[in-house]
Length: 219
Image (cartoon, rainbow, N blue to C red; front, side):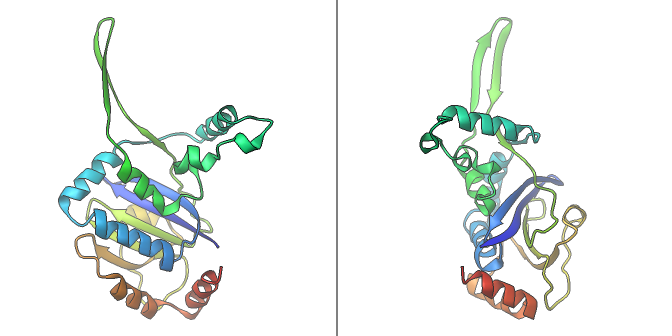
């Protein structure tokens, strides 16, 4: 079911990834997936450094890139026969609302590549880059999940009310995602088990939040 959400990665004091997701943004799906990714791939310094190296391949592009994507989709496919047209979300998953938290898997799978050659006047080199767009418009988003690689933290935020105090995050997160309040945060080195986190979420849920999430699980 459509539960709008954003997956965020912060590094060097900047928002490097802010990926929009249209579906299943509630904790029971997206929140768990992100915490599991952090447990598996970001729970020690070596793994985080490897992820940061790949994260640095990501380069923000302007909104006009959307026009290029659609043009490419048409040219790769056959305009008059949509059965042969490759879907946009397969050509450019990082630009698709279907991707959501899986942007983390995409970045993790990137392979840094440096191309060297010779031109008139000397050698040159090119470093691979991966085009992304930042979703910073949070009006209507229900959940935002942030991986902070500067302080080795993960923050879970929601626009819903919950039983408990709002937890501190980064100034850039509070300023950018103003409609979102942090309800849980963990060190990347010490994320509790899924069972323990589930209990924490259950304790924090308000009647409104619990009812909404129950409805989402029906679809």
